Image (tube, rainbow, N blue to C red; front, side, top):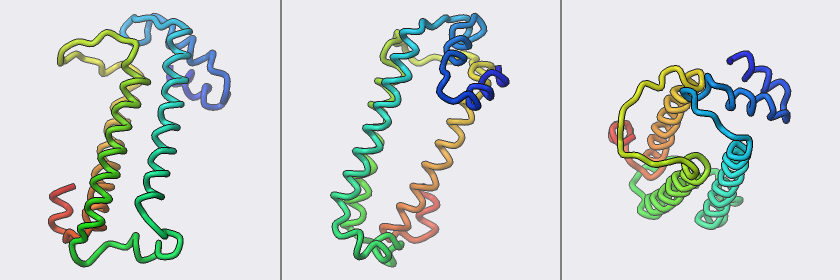
Amino acid sequence: MLKRLVSLSIVGNDRSLLYRHLGSPDCCGGRRHSDRSLRKVITSWLSAWQKVIFGSFILFLSICPDTHTNAQTYLMPSDTFSRSRFLTLAAGGTVLYGATVVGLNKAWYKGYERSSFHFFNDWGEWNNLDKTGHLFTSYFETELSYRGCRWIGINEKKSRWLA
């Protein structure tokens, strides 16, 4: 399976290999996906993420006035607590996180049956790439939280604990 996914990245735009893998009996515990549902998930995920990134960029530009003239000093960590930076970070983080959750819900979970919280062993699915994704996501969220705390003027020790 890893060989197939590596060759997919080499092939580029040829998604037929991905569709063949996802439609195989060894994918997702034997659950088969139709080509139509896969195309829908892939295209809705791309469009949702494009919207999130574009919206975040516009929000950043609208919140940070005159960033082209004072970007050097504005993006530097503050020595003292800055209420305006705190509000900027809180609003931007809330919007970005909310848009990400809504985008993932529409792109990834929309067409599937929902159930209550449960545990199951999914260690062998997706070549454990989902586990790697969770690891890197938590790392980058922690790093961004730390830098955000430093940017608004929280000292280094408290920033480490808050991140």
